Picture: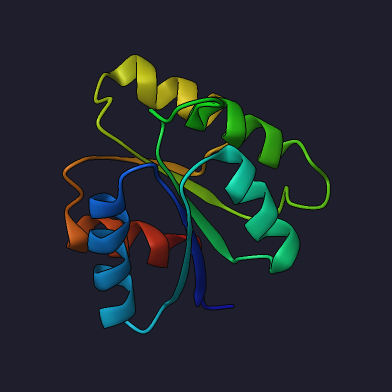
Length: 121
């Protein structure tokens, strides 16, 4: 089933705007959250087909939130792609161990992100 509804979780309004524009240009419906609490609220309102997750956020970080979502039976089927400025291999491996399906580093290359999204469909 093609992915159409995406939730972006990032504390940067600039990053949310950039990712939203990239995704909407390719026909995706996008909602956003600026932190863990707001992300959980968005999940309860409408279950997305994909989550793009930042790592460095105030409060609960993206690794912790990815783990919480991927281990919750209600949301475990939602693929998560981490989009982070943390670009070490250990960060990528840790993100995948928390339940993320893929990992992209910022600045996000739109073609790379879209290819990773398509590979999940």
